[in-house]
Amino acid sequence: MAPILKIDNLAVHYKTRFGQQVHAVKGVSFELEQGKTFGIAGESGCGKSTLVNGLMALFMPPLFYTHGSVIIDGEDITKFDKERLRINILGKVISMIPQGALNSLNPTRKVKDFATDVMLNHHPEMNKKEIHELLRNRFALIGLDPRVLNNYPVELSGGMKQRVVIGISTLMDPKVVIADEPSSALDVSTQKSVIKMLMDLMDKGIIGSMIFITHELPLLYHVADDIAVMYEGKFVEVGKTDQIIFRPQHPYSRELMDAITKLSSEGERYDAKDKKGVVA
Ligand SMILES: Nc1ncnc2c1ncn2[C@@H]1O[C@H](COP(=O)(O)OP(=O)(O)OP(=O)(O)O)[C@@H](O)[C@H]1O
Ligand SMILES: [Mg+2]
Image (cartoon, rainbow, N blue to C red; front, top):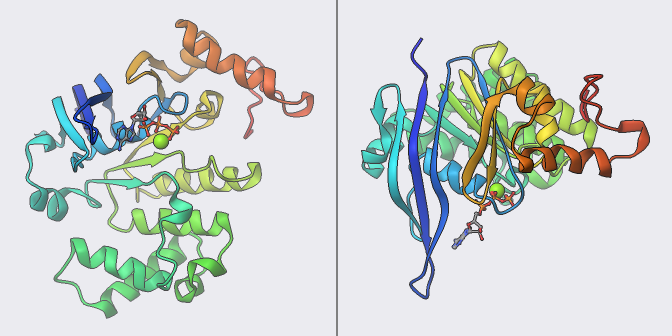
């Protein structure tokens, strides 16, 4: 089967106010198969979120396209104009759960009004009543109490806010979802419930395929089919999950695995051989 997403030698850069260029993503290539999850792990500042913007062709100053292609469903979206991208692609074909999703809801709007604005942006032909019904049905389907639609973000816990953002980001049944550190600001048990929710959405066919981004490489053992390790704007190693977790080849991949083993306490030590992970 052809991959749903094919990235070839993608590079993007920022232009600073002083005219300098920061090459944050320096030529990344990978393929995402339908129904699979591709994990990307790397330390803070290595370019993960910048890559996410590149994958969605969201080039807005100070971020600029350098070179490469992002082929979704056979078309290179780096060549699309903004309007075509907004109406045909974003939210429907590819959608992102942004990093810091906890703060991405509008504090002055009820969840349902915020979600309605998002939907109208992509589906101007829909009316509010239709959208509210869609929201109620979808929230019930994915195990979210539809009553939260009438809440303001401040009334919700961190975990609930994250789940609400995931519900809104996946309303249009996107073929590809990019989850940018969806669990890193949460406690371990809430992390588990967020990851479980994403897996359920895949099982239900609401999400087609997923890119899951984290700075905790071992976490990907429970989530990903394939993993890329990112360092200073490049993928230093790409492979099957078992290979990267149990037999990392690149010294930096080994460092990322060791970092967790050393930092964790005895009780929740990450022991790859026993397949006991931090979220097991
Ligand atoms: N607006 C900007 N202008 C210039 N450089 C930027 C800008 N935003 C990010 N960068 C730089 O691009 C690089 C990649 O940043 P990015 O946010 O993509 O990293 P990240 O891997 O997502 O980090 P984190 O794990 O902390 O979210 C960093 O060196 C950062 O300083
Ligand atoms: Mg980031």
